[in-house]
Length: 563
Image (cartoon, rainbow, N blue to C red):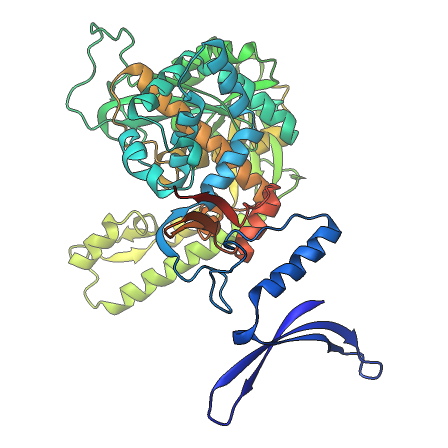
């Protein structure tokens, strides 16, 4: 049963709309649904709106549902016929709602609100530090700003009523509270998340990245801040500048376990011992240092072993003779795992010189790489065919030889001509879909070791989200070590919420955010009332909320009478 509208065009060209109460019935012959009119309400422009309201109220009373008409004034409707809003209502402004609604719901579900409220009560704090931290974390996932920007600009653009009264100094004070209780917060929240989502915590991966500062000099170690963090070092991007080193431990699904901040001149391998000691009391499973081929050297492997660390390191296949000779040429069948992953174990050497390699192969990735290489060769052949002068001294040839994309497949003949290196093309094909990892852990299974490299890719994706795509850890405007560490912790909490949402929805946070941005709140007002109403949910927003098991906000979020 539903309310149906019909239209009729008069002789003078005007259109009249009628309202009817209808019910669909299936035709006995055609079996198609046919509308049956139960009651005619008459013309919409002459209809008494209160008649419909009374009917709705009567039905709601029988069903035990309370219905109110917030715009009715002394029994007289202020609305015009056919309109759902008062005629004299004006729009004041619009607020973003979708993202902060989901973030706040996950914030409570993951135990962050309870944990931080417990700290507030234990410290007898009169300031809502938990709300301040929620605002800063939500901002990192919505539209990252500085702390001043959060307070001055961002909070006034979103519907987060519990945070509107925050002061700027309270944001900084909340950062200090988080710094003092960081370990307790991280531990409580992680295990709450693990229990809630039944996460596997038998294998923990950790790696490091860097965050640079746009300053000319590093921090003075003899300053009032004893633990100076901003030190000169080589960043992961290849620059030399004052920086800090950030270590991150994650599960195989990319859920953050814990984070650390070290001085910028700290070597990666020197962080392992402290990280393992900090995680030892958490009763986790195996903790493993995972890194790319840039960390794989004899000295670094020795340092990792001395630190009692188990490592899983990617290897350079094309430049390491032992891998080319012993690993890639090893005969034998691959063991097939899930997600197009195949692997086989290769042991090289005996005794103390024994090394354990895992050769992995992904057929789908091999096809993709082969197709990509063929596309590059086709481009090179077309480019060579366009030029009569194929000397390497020609400008176009110099640009090709300098290109990182093309130079590996080019060679120079004895007569100084540019040619495609067919042998290099065949050599590259031998590595399609393959990668080699090395580990000193004999207890880890072949599947866990093979999936370990995927764990490395998960960490790299987490770092990429932290630094460049979503959360944007940098630029960092803090100079005090405690504030730098707190800023990193806030970004990692944002990463935790992001990964939980991504795993639940099966989409990237960028896609989730784009769908949720369609959910907004509009503020209406007149001389008597101030009303906040949300717009209708889009289909994509409904899917996101359903995947996250989060109830949609009410249609009318706030209604107050202006004195």
